[in-house]
Length: 272
Image (tube, rainbow, N blue to C red):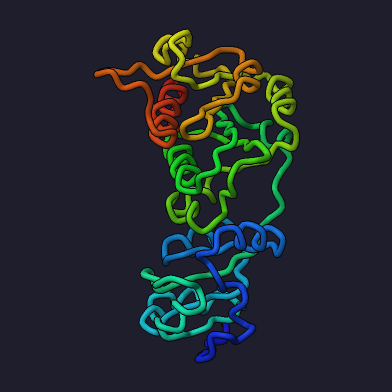
């Protein structure tokens, strides 16, 4: 059983993992370098543990101790009980959900290994908004995508905001980061995937017409909010596809577009 440790000093070095959580640039550098990420809220903490992530420590306000009692009893990691005011001073914001956990990252798989058992894959290029990353992972998990590949400049799926928006779905869909973009898309072709580029361009084929056969291996590429896929990514695709629009709307937010497109490419698959 973990030790329950009451801390009253915001400068206590044992709280190092939780300092400055609102400083995005600091956390983006620190967390991958130190091999950690932050899970926020009871459901997300439980889902991270169920996915096999080891806990480094937990930070709780007193009223959450009983709620998280079973997690405390199952984990050897220390649990720090703090007043809400102290948690705010340490993290930089009011911790509404009352529970934070510092989790140990796992090594990412290589793309080729990830693709061996996959048939439907999402590929993101330069999606660097953490809210969009979380929303896309949540849709990928809910709609049956098998894996996600990220270009080198995509945001971190394990950043606190991404994890929170996804409601822990980032733990459910395996992902890998490509090292060279877009050259490493050849890994998909070598594995037998047809690469579809999602774009609002009028020259693109409607998703209704391009919906793949359930046995076909398909990778769906998504670009960043606003700018969309780069010219290099579009050239690397086998086919351009678009979501038909009405009422003069030219495009959807990338998170919403991903959900529609994921449904289109997975709807012919048998339920798992």
